[in-house]
Length: 202
Image (tube, rainbow, N blue to C red; front, side, top):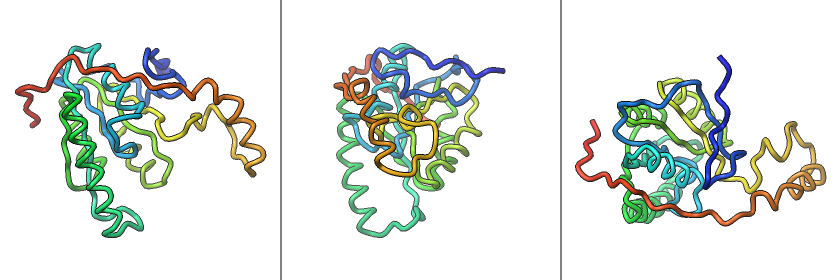
């Protein structure tokens, strides 16, 4: 079966959005689920804005999950302190935007797959570190309904800038500059239309 074409978004350029499977949205889903792992912020976050659009179109609330693991490569106490302080601010901002943030402890792809079970569809960040790629691959293999991955870390999506490995800054720089006007855009924020009032996560 061929992979579905990327859905058109009124908020995010299509080139930032990738559909990772051939599955349909879960018609019995209670919410849209956004796994926020690489882009831990409630503003200037393309994946979050796309997840909000999905939630509004489905008439469902938005659940945002983040998983804290104790064995992230080369991490130390200062890294975790900085991360947790930022998460407090991000979770407060997500609540103000009427999303339901949930923090889990454990192995991220497994814990987030559990949160995704009751969702209509899933949105997740794109990451380039090996550990993140492995997490996202494992997570995607566990999720049985529509899963989107949204590029929110690079100004110009990597696949748009170049389809091959570049060996020097002087070769990649003009390729990036060629697309800057297409992606240096103000990211429009959208209000969530359905609040998670009374939502119970099993």
